[in-house]
Image (tube, rainbow, N blue to C red; front, top):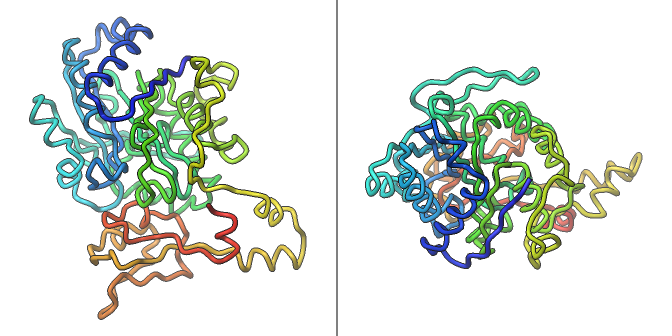
Length: 374
């Protein structure tokens, strides 16, 4: 399975269009879509963030795609379901989607409208937007970022947006653990993978640090594309500096598509390339020590290994976090300039951190946690 990678330092529409044109031609995408007319483009529209914040898929990537598909006589839908309770209209406006839709006369679709189909994988049932089945083919366009819960987010995690609205928070509520939640993403991927025809990962301006929304924009200057979402994530996470020991779910993603690491190929210049000094959340020696140390020493270490959401001075009391918290662990208290968190009930899913439009939520860490979480 080929992962195409192109060095593109800024959002140059012509260069991006040319890369996508060459890539789609090489994989014979147009022959595969010959009898398919309705194409749904699914970007990462996590929240109402302007493109320069590097939280959402940049509109220039989508503009190049729209031009390419229009040239091939396709009807284009553009849609997503942002996290939490934030207004979808505001998200479409701030991220540049509304402008694109008006310029190219394409259909904007809100996954929270139009109904759902219930699909089951194992013991888990997912309500998935009907648009995913009403379209003839899906183009998945993720954003290259670190993630405070999952460490990394790219193409496969982007598909979590096919679950409409606040229902996404319920899976965080019942699966707050990193490994458990990875299982949810894997199960969902096994259901929807057959609908995805092409995957793109926008790493021209990505994010490092406390992603997926409160991190630091970084100009990686890179664009990924492949028929396989899991292959993109395998290669892209390696280039960010992660090992598969840190991201065991990547192998699970590959298994869903009947791939192994040996099946993935890239041009030689990218085979062992790793970006320098990316601020990734790393599980180091002390985490392994905590897991392996028995008795009172382990209890002592875990007692002082703490991290939890807290607020900074950016809070405007917009209540997005309060309304989106899956366990209702937040409330507004008079004369306090930010929501109050009930830490006894907080499950550390970091939905508040992920969805805050003001970057007012940060991860507060104990001294030990600061050593372990970079």
